Image (cartoon, rainbow, N blue to C red; front, top):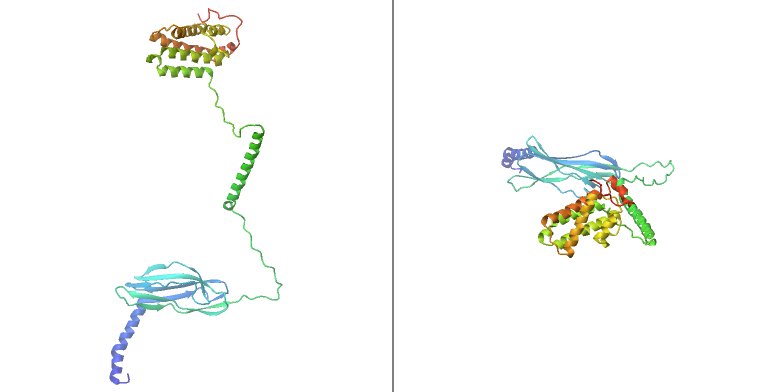
Length: 333
């Protein structure tokens, strides 16, 4: 190096090239770090930011930050890496929340960031620089009296926290009520839950429904004449039993007609019922074969009788009691 020729070559060729390369690198890659404050009390937290700015055509290997930066500096929280394009260059930044539980003047070491040009395998390392943090101990006034330890402050319960306990309480109350109800019912020999009885249909509605079902069944059209007329009389016997409260199912046709004479029944529908009962007895006991018209009229006459004698008619409310005289043959004539 002391040779004059070597000095000349170094000064005029090699040194300018090195300086040019350093200047280029300085323009293409810039790293930095900063801290919100350089003095805290021990246990306090402070934000530290570090980042890098690289020119287009470079890629960055971002460093992995652990739980500590040094033996005295702890990392409490790490933000995500913020990326920003700035005048054709790429800027990356990350924020750390740090603290220290010791007192003293501590060095925050620099963070190394590796970069490399696209298409080039050569890694270059840049450092953010060293920072310093002073951690002070809180000043204790020994002249003041020692105060007792402050107990934890209790916060009010939220509705969401109380909801499970409210539900459990309601469930316990419900179980207690059911238990008391069960014991009372058991003592009276009653079921715990009584089945609600469906209201019975009025006698005339029940009879009309059954007659309509019989009509739709087309029983006599299938040749079952005896069954058809037997079902008609059974429906009417049940209706008379429910409507006038005499034992019509166990009576003969003559006994039924005799019992009806004690009530104010319209003479016209009375005669219709008489014809229905007479025809049914002829079919069941004399093997008579009525015409299709007679079969249809029997059912229609029963419908007329039910509609005329149903309880919801004002005049029939008075007919619930037996009359002192027989049916007047001049009614409705």
